[in-house]
Structures are given as structure tokens and as C-alpha cells.
Amino acid sequence: MNISTKDYIYDELLPRVEKPGRYIGTEWNSIHKDTKEISIRFAFCFPDVYEVGMSHLGMKIIYHLLNHQKDVYCERVFAPWPDMETEMRKSDIKLFALESRDPIKDFDFVGFTLQYEMSYTNILNMLDLAGIPIKASQREKGQPFVVAGGPCAYNPEPLSDFVDFFILGEGEEVTLEVIDAYRRWKATDKSREEFLAMVAEIRGIYVPSLYKVSYNADGTIEEIASNNESVPKKVRKRVVKDLKNSYFPDKVIVPFIDIVHDRIMLEIFRGCTRGCRFCQAGMIYRPIRERTVEELVELADRLLESSGYEEISLSSLSTSDFSKLNELVEKLVSKYESKRVGLSLPSLRIDSFSMKLVQEVQKIRKSGLTFAPEAGSQRMRDVINKGVTEEDLVKSVEAAFITGYSNLKLYFMIGLPTEAMEDVQDIADLGYKVVDTYYSVPKEKRGKGVNITISVSSFVPKPFTPFQWEPQDSIETLKEKQRYLRGAIKNKKLTYNWHEPFVSYMEAIFARGDRRLGEVLYKAWQLGCKFDGWDQHFKFDTWMEAFKEAGLEPEFYAYRRRELDEVLPWDHIDVGVSKKYLRGEYKKALKGELTRDCRVVCTGCGINLLEEGGVCK
Image (cartoon, rainbow, N blue to C red; front, side, top):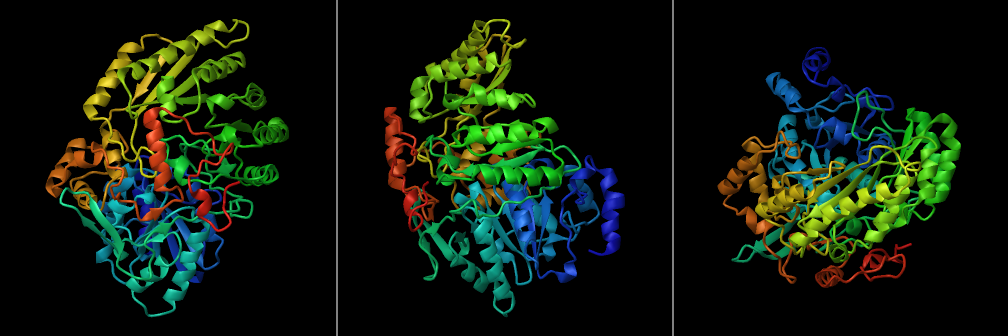
């Protein structure tokens, strides 16, 4: 791309689109290097709009990590919104990186983060817009290697036709090892295939072309086998054992426009010990590893100074499980109260809610409170191993009301295994009990105008969870449960939010899909599917047409109960949690039996065997 083309993008293209701030790329703390002094170029691609991608902590970490390498230039790429894509295709502008506005087809790596399944068509669309062959088998030497990581990479099979290799697990260390292998490969005259064979020997790297899948007559998988003796039969995820010495940026890019999470994200620990049976993150991000309070306060100092932000969000899967949370909050509040720097505490658990903690946070600024009972009945909470009771919820919301909160959000799921309509009714009943709790607090202590928002999502079975064998509720059943809840929630103090189940249906298909879904994905993209996570762009009928053209039945993937001894599409991936453990948890779920927090007693999930010497702390 020459200078005049870059100027055309800035002067002619951007004034014609809805939010030009998405594409400018000169934000505060963005990194700009002289490309003449760079030998490796990496395009970090988030397959969604700028406002969503810029809120992703993983991008912030890898972006700055790679740019710390003198010979590496990492730049950001987001999915252009349809108005921008139209202008780009009309003017034959290839997808470009924000910092340099160079076309990414000339880069060494094009890396995608896979945060949710409904972004997959955007990946194909971005490759096409970039002028990069969509299918990995069609790429030649001199074209970028397409790599993907993130939580959805743990079942990489639906994308195996399009991605050259996947990074499984935490990326700080393994990404640098891949870059080092590329340096060595680039100095030779070896083929693309030889580079893929090189990186396949790095732990945490999965190269789909080096594995073959065979199927039984009924469509289930017969075997997943490597076709190269040098690659492992099972690919083990990567774990950063020592967070204290791991990389974390002391600067973040400050966007020109509002983004979803426009604040500092301070990662306090990784992993979760609770063992909720529906939660993929709780399984794949094990083991738990904490940062020290001293390290976190120092990081907060540097991030605030370099960004000018006025809010810090403590980031983790379950913030209230951080062992030194009270100490951390007290130190941060004490230090920044005079500067009016706010503190938000997402992911608070009902059974560990602290009035003292919330009062500390409120010294600066009152933020919203969200609790996630997940299920309305105690029976269902035991099935999913949530480990909280109705009494826990009542005590927590009462404490919140006493401290002045009057607007709360409650998150639930419908469609969980063994759920009956009585359990759905209990969601509404629990909402009413929360309202009653508000009115039980003396007027002089409570805030005014109570409103409880009940948000209900549809359960999606995910790989590497005890429910990975379960069918999803049918669309009709989920709609029936939604209608029932609408009828059961009549109080004006209760707001009921829900989503149509069609997207959840597609998510369930791709979450547990096999390689054959690549053809469906490709056809759906050809038929115009993209931005499938956005209601205004999702085309359910088009997806069904794509399945028909590919000769596959979507119900096979969404509604079929898997046998416990069945070969699953992700069985060649090792996340450290054993299949034996997941089977045991599945059987306990059907009996409504609880499993204790593994910080109290080891439950034998297998993660401690993933690394020599163990990794649980």
C-alpha cells in the first residue's frame, strides 16, 4: 500500500463511515515502529468491532509483549463494521492494520483470538477482505501464517480448514517461542509445511493438518490420530506457572471513542476453584494462581499514570475469591480516594459478599452490583455445583440494600440439565424474594426506587465441562420457558431480560462441533453471514440453508446426548482436567451431589499432574 492509498483511507474513506475512531490507530499509548527496522510483523486480529475488541485484556497483554521484542511489530486489526467494509470493497482497499495502515496480507502472522463461536464467520470475512486465501491448504510460501488462540481454541476442529495452527493455553511464553522458531525458519529456505512441523513440536501448539479424523457410520468420530511421528498424540495446554514474573503491560491504549470496558483492567489472579459444572472457563483456566497485593498496587500506579483513566476493574473469574481482596481494596481506596479513582468489583459471589468491602468501594464512587445465582431452585444450584443457597442471596442483597444500593442485576440460566418448569418458576420466585428483602430494610437505611433486573440466558453445553455430553434444550423448549417466565414476572420492580435462543443454538453446534462444520461455516459466509453475535445481523435461515447445502444435520450437534465413552472432537487436546474427573462430576450432577471447593480439599481433577512438580497453589 503506497502513501497515497494511506492518505485516501484517512482523508476520503473515514469521513464516510459511522465511527471513524474505530480505524484511526493513533491512540495514546499505541505503538508505532519503523517498518524498515522490523523483521517480523504480527497482526493481532479481534474478529469483532473495535469497541468489543479493545475491551479484551488478552489483546492488551500480547500486543505490548510482542512489541517489546525489537525485531517484532505487533499491530491491531478489528472486523470493519459493514459500512466500512462496503467502502473498502468499493475502493479495493485490503484489510489493514491500524498502526501502519499496511495491508495484513504482507505480514508474517495473522493471529485471531477466539472468544466466542459466533465470531467465526468474521474470521473468514476478514481473511477474504485482506486478500489472504481463506483455506489453509491454499496458502503458499510468502503468505502469512494464520494462527488462533483463546478459549474457543480448545475445540479447534470447526476452524481446522482455515487456521494454520492454534495456540492452546496462556500465550505469554508460547507466543515468544513461536516467534523464535519463525526467526530460525526464516533464515532457511524451508517450506511452510516444514515450519508447521517445527512449531508442532512446541508444547501448546496444535497443527490441524498434521492430524487426521475418521468417522463411524453413525457420524460419530472413530479416531483422531497424528499423521506425523514427531507430533504428540495429545496436545497439552500451556500454563504460566509464576504470575509474579510473567509479563503484564504497564501501559494500555486509550481509545478515542467509548468502548465496552473503558477502564483499567487489573488482573488479580487466574483460574477458579469452585467447580461450577456448566462453566468452561472454570475448567480450562485451572489452576488458580494469584498476584501479590504489592505487585498489583504497583501495576495500578503505573497504569493510572500512563493512561489517565479514573476507574480500575479487578479482573478475574471470581473476584471475591482473591485471598487478599480486603487488603488490596483498602490499599487502593486509601491511595486513590483523594484522586477520585473508582474501583469496580465484577464477578462477586453471593456467598462471599462483604458489606465492609462494598462500603470501602463506595467511598469513591458507587458502581453497579451484579449477582449470579445461575438457577432459581436449590436443587438446580446443587446440580450445577454452584455452592450457594437462597439464604446466601438474601443476606447479600440485604447488605447491598442497607449500604444504599437499590438497583441490582441477577443472572440466571434456563435449559440446564434436569431442569423442570418448577425450577423456572423458582427464578421468578427468587426475584420476588429479593424485592421483599428490599422492603424489609428500614426506609431510613435503604435507597429509593428499587429495581431488580433478571437476566436469563440459555445454557450452552461446552467442551471440557461435566455437561459436555448433555444435549441442549430445543429452541421450542427454550421459548416455552421464556414465555413462562414472562408470565410469572409481573411486578413492576422486576425487569426481565432475555435473548432469542437461535444464537445459543448455533453456539452449541460450533462449541462441540467437528471438522465437518468447516464446510457449513464456509457456505454460511458465502451466503452472507457475518457479525452473527449481533442480533441485527444474525441470519438463522441462512445458516439452516448452509447446513442443507453441506449435507449435515444441525440437530446432530445440538440436540444429541453424547455417550460417555464416545470419542469427542477435542479428545486430542489436554487441558489438565481429566475425562475421568469430568465423567464423575457429570454423574454427581445427575444425583444433585456437591463437590467442595478445591482450595478446601483436592478433588482430583488432574490439573496438578499437568506440570512437573504440580501447579496448584
